[in-house]
Image 1 (tube, rainbow, N blue to C red):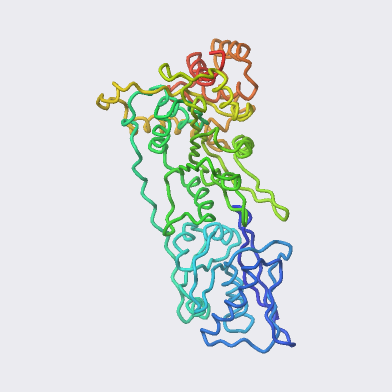
Image 2: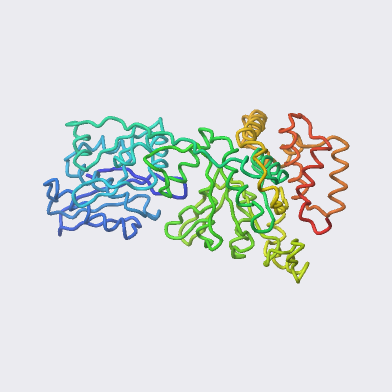
Length: 503
């Protein structure tokens, strides 16, 4: 008779249920695993055999066959050790078969039977809840998985503890959720002297989750401004925190099983590969754009990234998800992030310096910025120049607004959007499109006339036209206005055209 246990196989942030079937039959003794296992899964038989030996459980002199169903789904990772061991123990009638079939299990076994933590406990708990099953995972993974209220999570430290739990000798208590990570105290915008226009642009971007490109000479404060962006973003909602934590769980970034309510801030180096940015590599892991889901992706020295890496951003920025295609699978990850890019005006950085003037003006700047293709440049909602701060201003005392003051306005603007889009898939103004964009962002007569004249004069694309409308809607929200008026359109268009050659 076949004994069954259950585990999961990961496809992006989705965890697909896998049935682990164990059958013992007469014949030459052997232990085989079938069902498209990778090397780590195939080696589970040796770890399981050693773990059972540590419990003084001898394998019978029969042929043992483990089938991982569905058989055409690739199985990767060491988390199959525990469900294989449970299915085998059930087949040997050591533990009740019905109890094993009511749980989803994952965990790696060491040779002495200790359960080693694995990645993906949170998505596995979500699948267990959907299938109306409990979850058994290593002790270190319990606080993470316990955030899913709908599933009972049991976290033994060893295989022996799991065995006693299933036999009823020493039932385990359900695991408790980990601590909520405290919101980190970010750097304060009050430290930034000058750059009022850049601060205003980042406030608008944070409110509507708009993409920003900052161009300025070295030392003008681009990285300093971006580093303080986290301090004005509102904390993650419960839904957003769960979405983000599921991705971070697969990447092994959750510490002590705690859920982080702070929005991610990722800043990869410009030498990062395409797989590091978009996702891929071994087991198609999430990239930086997915790790920044519901947060910020800051890319300094933007034109220095390889052209192929930059061009791969075009589709994820627009759709909010990325598909990592492989020969045997297509893995989908969410990636709704705010892209903040910083660049020097030219390769020598002296394009606008009156003292050390660039000898190749304007060719130097045009060649350097041409590394950013037109379609990618068109996806930036706000494009601003960050001029150098005068040396005499650096000795002035702090006089600008604090991050707390700006964050309060951002939170108010986000609250307006949350109320407006309640019951829809839209979360912020940056997600608006089609009829929804027309309904909430159509400006008044004067504003529409101005926008049409700007679009005709500077040749805005349809995408650029709609992005100006989205930014204008965000500016109106910050202004407390129910309608988009001419001043809102004018400010939004000004950010759009800040780097135009005609200006």
